[in-house]
Structure formats: structure tokens, C-alpha cells
Length: 128
Image 1 (cartoon, rainbow, N blue to C red):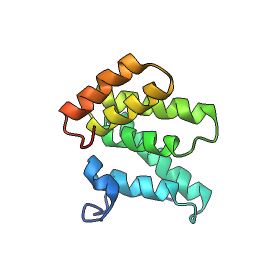
Image 2: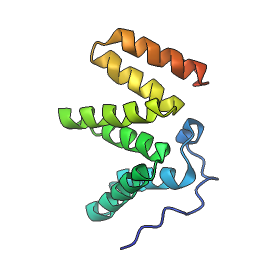
Image 3: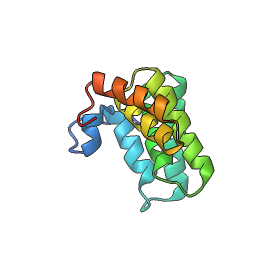
């Protein structure tokens, strides 16, 4: 099965729209977490996001951070989530900065967390 991420999802009403996720990444994110579709298909959407990260898509990294954050079934996923958020934050994704700060705060690194919260606020993330 070939996965096509280039479907017009930009008009979709979704809370993550405000987090700046591009339409194609938003679609992949939703389908990757949709438990009503077969696991194999969800895995293809995750692979598609990973492929987009290799092409430099910071939104895909952010989406993978969200996917692994939402599945804290083990410590490994928590670490993966922090890696995706950290990479996207370093590339300037404002919401990744915020989520990376949350990860750092949970780990007890409040000094680094504060710096990322400040960067997220300066980048326009509301409520920081």
C-alpha cells in the first residue's frame, strides 16, 4: 500500500492546526493514532512521517513527538518523545519548544526547561 500524504487537510478543524502542523503531517498524525484502522496501516503513516523527517520536515518531527508522548506505555516512548521534540525545537518549531520544556521539567531539569519556555513564549506560543 502506498501512502499519499499530499491530501488537502489544511481546511480541517483541529486543535493542532494552531500548533502549525502542515496539512499532510496533520493527516498522517491522525491516521497514525487512529485505533480503528489496522495496525499495519497506522505503522505506514508513522513510517511516512519518519521519511518526511529525513527530508527535513520539522512538522513531521513534532508530530512524531506528539505520537510518542501520547503513548507513554514505557520509558522508551517517553525518551523518543523528548528526542523528537528536542530536534524540532532546535530547528525553531515553537510548539516543540514548549513540549520539550515540559519533558525537561518532568526530568527535573528546570533551568533548561525555563529557557525553552521562554523561547516558546518569544516565538508566540499562547499561554506560556
